[in-house]
Length: 73
Image 1 (cartoon, helix red, strand yellow):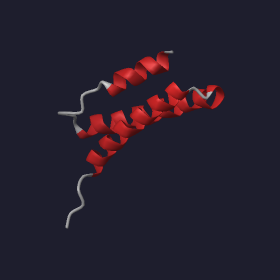
Image 2: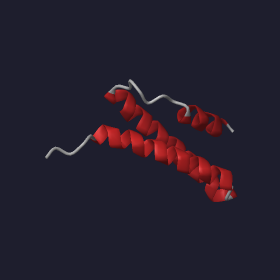
Image 3: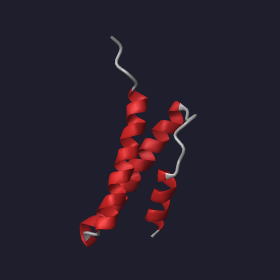
């Protein structure tokens, strides 16, 4: 499973010292991985695939939260 290997690499990716363009690219990569794994999950219903998708989604949300920044008051 090449997708699982790519997902593991993404999970181990360091988030510190990323530029904005790196964060955007990481978010897009995460979305692509999640959607590809989801297609396989629909057919197999493998619990491990669901766990991988959850972890990727969590990391993707952290990256997107950082991209959006804090609302100004």
